[in-house]
Amino acid sequence: MLSAKGPQMRAFTQRIAAFSTQVQIDPAPIVFVGKGTTPRQNSLLGPNDSQYPFQGDVAFAHKPLSIRQQVENAKIERCMEDNEHNLINLLSNTNIEVDRTHLAQLKEEAMEEIQANAADVEIELSAIEAPKLLKKEMKFLFPKMETHKMNNVTVFNLTQKSEFDMKAWSEAMEEEREKLTASFIMSANAICSTLHRFGYWADFIDPSSGRPYMGDYTNHTLFETNDAYKQMGFKIEDLGCCKVLQHACWGSNAFVGTIFTDAPVDGSAVRDILKKVTQEIDE
Image (tube, rainbow, N blue to C red):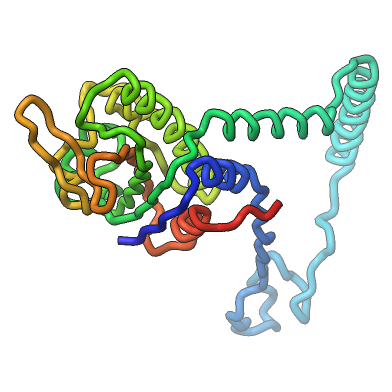
């Protein structure tokens, strides 16, 4: 299991949100196209490769076009020129344009909203390969997911340290729980967006409903008191009337949210996300 602790949930949410919107530039693939190395049996008997019909493996640079083909191509070119001209006129008569300053302002406002709504608490983010009990739950949580893909699933558990004890109900505890839920959803959305950008599948459990946030609706639910969490480093305390999750360091002063992905637990995408927990703010 990989894990990282950080002093501020708000800072982590900001960093992971910024990370999820970074542009990923993939190098253009290089494709080598070459003629096969199979030698001619006897060049005197005529070419046996229609692509290279002349002596010395020589071919036309362009296949000669018939008169009919030349006429058809000329019609197509005129049609394309007319369409391009019409499109230019259409765009020139509209007021649609991209205001980059406005887009930057919207992004800045979104980041400010994240900072304002995120709880400023200690956090721990861990990544572990999905244990057996959780894999059994996954087939009901994600019914459309192919069975063989469930064998290689990584689970993120994002734990926030709470001010109030989660096993002692009060209005203040309920208000804090709602705020911690909102903080988790914002961070989980950013984490999933990052994983999607890397080409991986990812979804998370809505703590308020116990159901997948992005996936299709299901009657099956997963809450933090499920026995599967015992296999991920947590304890479940049975109080008789209810069960409460216990964190190794923070006890029941903890709120846990869970994210699923098919990204390898030891892959660069998972490690990059974990680094955001303790990374200092660049700006």
